[in-house]
Image (cartoon, rainbow over all chains, first blue to last red; front, side, top):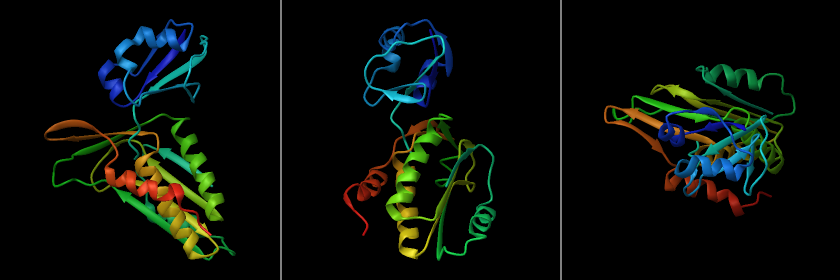
Length: 72
Length: 152
């Protein structure tokens, strides 16, 4: 289980910014979210650190999906 | 060294005055203020999405590296998030160094980073609707100037 955050165009595409989702790992969470979080340049951060591979999630995990950053 | 993200408008002049006081060894303070443009009426609001705790930490990491690279005495970055109206200040950067060259270059470098690679997601709203903005080729070229260049 994890608290999932979406930013930028991902939040617009999903229609939500924050949601609790049942998933034991980052890969399971990606599978549950499907196309929404797939695409060039989309990164995942677990507890505010970018994660490139898979990792286990707990109820306390915060997972953010970050589309390509635009700068300010 | 300080990095602030805030939704409230800020006064660049007041920030510069406060940043400059009480420095006896700093010979140069350089500041930059970025304003939101109306783009001849095409943009009525700019909206900057940020990830609190991540965006400020990433900017802080780059700011720390810049402080070391350019030998700064101090620096300040204030960045707006949320909705921003044309004419309002979006970003303020001030750098303090013993001599002007380091202060100018560090400010230039930090702005190139903030405009192209900082973790923000930018949306423009106008009469024609809204759209997410990616960094321009010019922004990316400006930022890449610093990748290989070393200061002496």
